[in-house]
Length: 357
Ligand SMILES: Nc1ncnc2c1ncn2[C@@H]1O[C@H](COP(=O)(O)OP(=O)(O)OP(=O)(O)O)[C@@H](O)[C@H]1O
Image 1: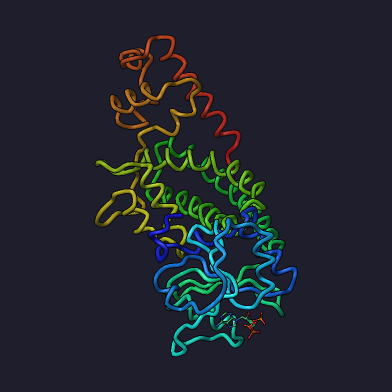
Image 2 (image 1 turned 90 degrees about the horizontal axis):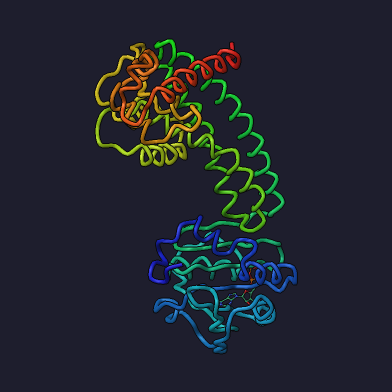
């Protein structure tokens, strides 16, 4: 972590910094189990220096066992910014008592005040209650039991799988509409909302994963396996429907996933995201460029897909083009032109058999 940007640490950065699998977390967990309690300040900036009174200068490399041993003493342990060195132990901290604190015990009050006053990350390990509380600036976060988060993450994976099925059905029906040239903005919005649901669960999973650290390895793999295809489909959908202009579909996808962190996204916001300004009649039809369907044809190089879209502009024109017209496109000979026609036929047959009524 960049030591010059302490205040910029987000909760997710902090959670990753002390996630299971890190030496710091191993040390904290040891202190928690030993019921000695602990008060740890990460970073020895000028403001922290002003508050430290007494204690021993240690200056040794961080190790989980030394943290555990030093926590047996009263007072606070001070680490460097990176958390890989123990600088002081048995330090008394004297933050401004006028800083408001909602905590009752002295350890936690001190932790909250030091965090507010110095912006350093302060970790309080309770002696009586097995709770680890993090403070930084005005942020306060109690770590949850790993088994509770694992259960929640597993439930989220199951939900993601269910949503993926619903999304796939919706994409199949949408594909048929594309072949029939019947897609309306309303249909496009419906598919985008299904993607939104999937992204929402993904965002929830990501927040669990930053807290789970190494313990979340398998869940991360499962999530990636489920999401990879979906993200490719979403990017191609955006490429198909993004309004004319300079916008980068990749960037739109990132923004789309970011928007899914907040509440429900209105149609108007989604349309704006795709570059449509002003009033859009949702029942009006809209034609895709064809990237998504062309990508389903085996062994069709990206450059050929670009040439096709560039020449015909719309999917419907590519589908209705004759072999001779396709043959005329750069990089396409008669054999490939026939393969493209054959490819569309097969995709359509597949869509009809998978159609969800
Ligand atoms: N200003 C301080 N500087 C350094 N350490 C402190 C300070 N205040 C409290 N502590 C540490 O906290 C310990 C106990 O405090 P207290 O029991 O009041 O805290 P608490 O917030 O109720 O926490 P716990 O849940 O662990 O009991 C002290 O023995 C000391 O090690």
